[in-house]
Length: 267
Image (cartoon, rainbow, N blue to C red; front, top):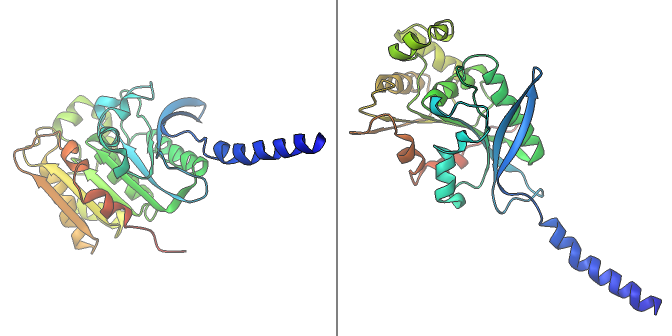
């Protein structure tokens, strides 16, 4: 009798272990992080086939000004979040989505530190690959992408910058004069110096030719500056498209295959 009970127990265990091993959270996950005594909500997307048995590419996504809040959710409603919901199989990566607080910008403290802290936390929790870590952002997040790339050169394997730049538009500076202390001068030297700080990281830049919010010459200037230092630069300018160019950008068939082909050199 005891032998039959033992065999039954062993059979149950042999069936239960693989089932348990596959019971991982996937999809959009709520997370929190505390920075300088303040708790922030953020989101992490985990692919359906995620497993801890391998390292995963990681994308840090910076949203635009319209998604600023403290609910930890709105930043998933546009840009890469939309692309994931349309076809999540196109993005087999951990996607980290911090949220900038209202009346702040990614270039203002402590938002840049928050973005990096969420990246590090998600990379550790979900077996992220530090050699295949990518940075992307749109509009205000496009500015944040150039800013973080300058602040952390050599950290990201590739950049995707959508309707961003380094010098804020005049209307933005008028509405938010506090940004002046974080904005470089509006001149050729600023773009050359920014590119030099970013370094030769591969970048794909997108912008709408008729953008009424962020002047298209912001992207044109950064494209030229990155080319000048010898970086791999791809540039896509959409004719007759205004500010909302990110839906077309993240829907580009070649974008994510190109992105995931990039990795940092082995140390």
